[in-house]
Length: 249
Ligand SMILES: Cc1cc2nc3c(=O)[nH]c(=O)nc-3n(C[C@H](O)[C@H](O)[C@H](O)COP(=O)(O)OP(=O)(O)OC[C@H]3O[C@@H](n4cnc5c(N)ncnc54)[C@H](O)[C@@H]3O)c2cc1C
Image (cartoon, rainbow, N blue to C red; front, top):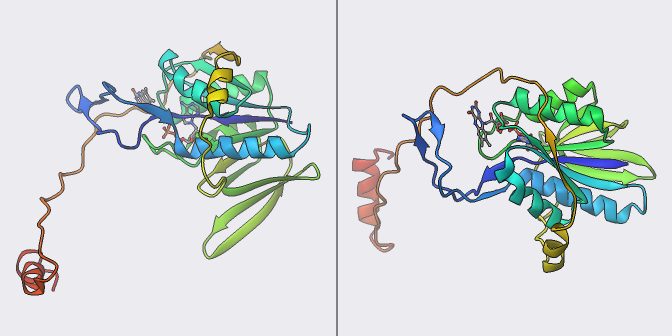
């Protein structure tokens, strides 16, 4: 079996978000890019399964749709333990276009298990995984927080209100994973970083697929009100602020 992890290259979660062009474009200047946190957990789980499955899992591939500047993120995934990486040479424009690019690749080189994150931490569309499954005419399971390979059978756990669903699926399938799929993301070791340099990173040309949507403008949330410090002993002052300024009592 082969596992494919779709990786979104996203700004570090501590990035101060700015826009340019009259708030129509994200300003990428000085941004540190990382693997989307959900995709990093998906990769970790895929590696855990590969390591405990004997020879059942042949390889774990990571894939991103992006330009050359996304390659350090793919190299990090290789350092964490992925066997090979694929970059589809296209600027991500919308979920349809990204899913269409991944579909083009998977139709050429099929995978048994395809993992997508529940959302990317930058544009938060939560759309690519579902679209990909539809384009591939493949079973898909959303909100997956557990993935197990037992005697050649796939078992998936889904979080539901107040409980958990346990499902089996045929392969190939797409799982859209969330928190819980792995406990902690793996940190690349020095050996992993050295090995990543010689692991294959293949660049594939984009397939023809135009975006269907586009952003017209972005708006930042209003700045937080200035923090007012009140002495822990001064309960009277705290009550006054609650009553007169915040009007919550
Ligand atoms: C550099 C850059 C420039 C962009 N410019 C534009 C623009 O000009 N106009 C515009 O409308 N939008 C732009 N986008 C945003 C683009 O629309 C989204 O990245 C795309 O729609 C995916 O949607 P999402 O990020 O909400 O993914 P979600 O659906 O939230 O992602 C879910 C999962 O899908 C997979 N996935 C998502 N993106 C990728 C990817 N690129 N490669 C592989 N797997 C992926 C991951 O597994 C991820 O966890 C840009 C994004 C980037 C990174």
